[in-house]
Image 1: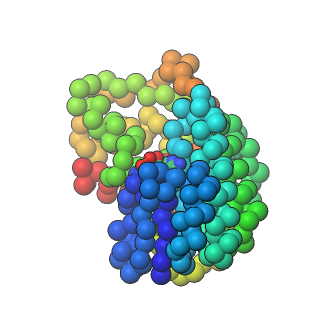
Image 2: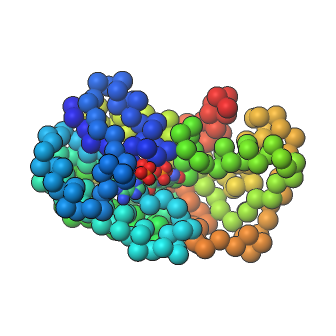
Length: 273
Ligand SMILES: NC(=O)c1ccc[n+]([C@@H]2O[C@H](COP(=O)([O-])OP(=O)(O)OC[C@H]3O[C@@H](n4cnc5c(N)ncnc54)[C@H](OP(=O)(O)O)[C@@H]3O)[C@@H](O)[C@H]2O)c1
């Protein structure tokens, strides 16, 4: 199986590529330097020269706050870049995996978001990723849109690692208490992506995030509990820590208990730290 992976140098891509090796796939791991998805001319030229069986499209503009102040750049990558990838999938008649986000929802619900729930993003990142979803659906029926949430893992900057570092120098940490969410381990998500590919699951949209949910202060306390660090976590209001992008208050996907609970996975991840 010949696979093109965009965004392979990111948090998720670096976790996924070794798993593609394990299933015997031949893959091209690309980043923005060697395969800029927004460069339509270059993308089309390269694609004429390769034969593929699958596209795994992970490349994205992922800085949620910077997206508010640089919306053109976020839309260029997440909307136009994804449109380019969708057109290629259509042209080559190959399936495309597109990793999307729980941020396509507004967070006003109080129970986990189902695939059939109405999308309504409240920040530029969510809106640009939703436009990406729409382009994928417009150009091909052979798609896997995989929505996930709040990733952490060993291959890139993330909240869990940031807290571990921060706690080396601070014994009292203030954490914004404005969201309920399901932190998701990249390893768990990648295993499911691999299952979808190998088992040729039905095309469509999937929600894949950890089971259960918690607030940021609860998640932070859990990190320090597992690591046996005596750190005092103080919940603070979001007005005490203003950020450019609005966040969905309830950022939880209904993944039908596909993944382990966020506590179990966090514990396993932290054992490696
Ligand atoms: N991280 C999360 O919490 C989270 C949550 C939900 C969904 N997602 C989605 O999951 C996917 C992977 O996220 P991630 O956290 O792994 O992202 P990441 O660590 O920020 O990595 C982004 C990747 O996209 C590439 N990229 C950016 N602009 C590009 C361009 N114009 N052309 C080609 N490649 C480009 C980057 O390449 P360079 O290294 O060259 O910059 C990098 O490989 C994304 O689609 C994201 O929206 C992430």
